[in-house]
Length: 464
Image 1 (cartoon, rainbow, N blue to C red):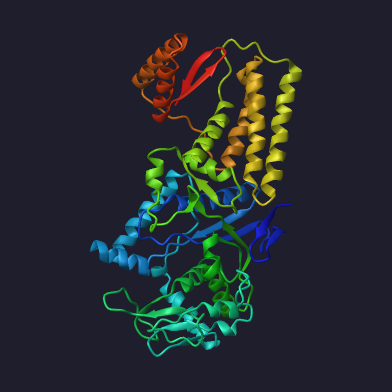
Image 2 (cartoon, rainbow, N blue to C red):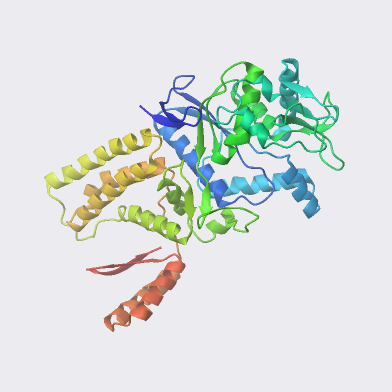
């Protein structure tokens, strides 16, 4: 039985869907005002892995990921660049779609946008006002009345009285309570605005997701996910307004990934330590980022630096080593040894599933694959033929694919291969002469170009 950690209940629970065999999953997407960064990549990869595994387990997954395409950040960025905010948002949406494709993230079933869900947003706000959960202020804003929601704060574990102590009301706001949040914001000069019963304006961030969720998936869903920085206030407010509007429980399971940290610090524009997805992919293979995510728990912080990336890359090369062909001179394993390898491949499927069923324990799933790779490599060294290796190698490819790993070898031109062969030959001569400094220099420079050198008892080999 698949179990997952539910942020709402703070425990692992058996996964039971609203409809047998079907999963309705909503993941909060990006606010499109700048290049997406590796923190966005982490969250996208986490939920891509979850989706892929659910589909592997036989579920039909309807996966919705929104784009926030009207927001203060978008407006401010567009003003800085002298660009139309809608054009800017579309440009970054297109870029992010390409980022996800390059990362081998499956396209979402749908990508709703706030600007395309305005009728649903207005209807939801009006419904909350009619039910007494929201109120229009004299300045044209509309606020959610948190004191009407007896359960407000249960996702984050915060008490309303404690939250009130640190809350501030801005001069232009006309709230009944400091923690009331905006459902509709009155228009300011030069900003995009839509007509509404309360005057021209635009929606607040939280109501956008509730309305898009309702429009795409209905009143109740199975999984709502995002980064753990969204737990409060965004997801807390989503629960409040969605359940107040429908009168029904909103999401069965709340899932949140940990934050990505660069060198132990949270990635932040103010710190100047942002690494864009484009920048990362110009230097490393997409599978390296996925391996970095798979190596740990999706709920834990993820350290992103050269050391952890190198470790992920080594793990990736280790997996690929299990897919190498047998030597042409292979004499073959005994029937008993060949059968044992097949049996181990079959057992790996169960170990893999047992790990992933335990709150998507991807590091445990990888450990099962690494063990099978070890046995494949031992069998190859013992003389296994390609036919004898094939069942186990097929298992590696299949289960790695469940995790979204492509395990593809880098392609190069024949001329480039010849130059690498020459450099490896020179390096071998340097090693014979015990010129270790030059030998290491050639190895390190080739590695920087994407070439991995392997020194074995039988000689030196290499691969892209």
